[in-house]
Image 1 (cartoon, rainbow, N blue to C red):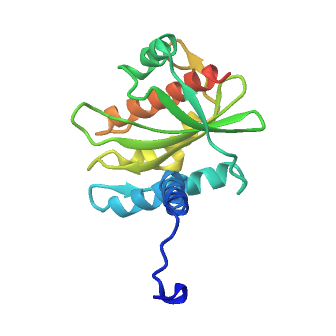
Image 2 (image 1 turned 180 degrees about the horizontal axis):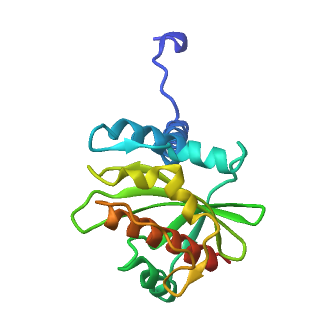
Length: 199
């Protein structure tokens, strides 16, 4: 058989390199905020889930369309102890992704209003000095208490600073959503503490 009619067999090294590039591309896509936002939107179905704002839309808004590359805060035992003190229980992550630009840090994480509840995803921006700049509910999965995602409620958290394990502002309760209100206060305080740990 002539060389021209022989089957083409790619070199093993070339095949392995191509496969590695495909895997890296897939990982980059899945780990991007946009991919996670799409997954979140797809999995959030009414009436037990309300998508207030996709995570990538939140980041785009708070950074005026120029979202910085994400960074990772690693929590050692001492940091975990500090976070757990304000989070109310052991913080479930040892590495927390955040975004920082011009003296502001953005955080997106989950919390539970009560054990057995579905997690709520919220986003916070904290300024240098430990002041909440922006607080948003992104994905809410409870049948009651979704008023915590409304602008008038969230406006109460803007400008808040740490006061012990709580905040230095009084936040009005919502009838039938006390645990959800407490959760948002707790999450805002946790975002402040996370910001304080950024090197």
